Length: 298
Image 1 (cartoon, one colour):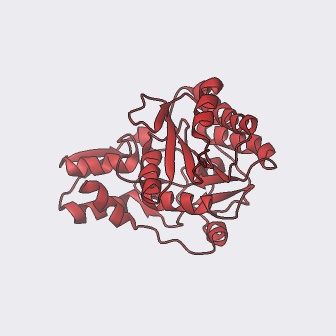
Image 2 (cartoon, one colour):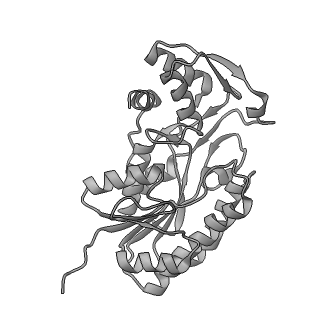
């Protein structure tokens, strides 16, 4: 009988922005990669599967027999109006996955569940994992409930709850802020409508975050949560200036009051202390300027 492949990973939401980058990187590293997608599967190693359909999910997991899981499938658009879908997908979909793994009794080495820095809410300053979460939207709250629910599986699997801060890169949908700005510069638009130009947020590179996910998969850390962040922040004004230098083009900015949130926190960034301790090393993050150059020249 053929011995099973020892480095088989199942990435839920593989057709999304992060999943596509992770798949390419892990394949190059020699992993056998499979994934689920809510849309039509365009590759042989992809399975069309709604994670709310437990029977369909069970079938995929039983076929793949993964050793590693990276669970990315979620409704991640914060402004989504379908509140029921946010809670169902982000909570019940995750529980469906864990129940399938438990019922199949597979040799699972590590599970990474993607939560979000949105669980912290609007809290000023450097955010560490020890802070009491105070989400201010349904997306953040759904991720916090997911975190609380999966804790009961810590005695069954080696689970890491990852809390990524903002990240961007090639392939991100233009509905997100950085791709929207880059698109305006690439198309030499004359004006752009934005919100507050003087708030500072992290804008990390998806490639750097993919590296961290893979390092966490192979770490001894589990049964806990950790920020995925760099601790480096930039204002929208700084981003516009960078792109002006890169492209030689200038945009006139019109502040749209609809994009300005009331009582918006000036700076939000994550503490890297736990992440660096878990991985026993510091991480080399791509700079925002490197990221913008990649995106503008793709």
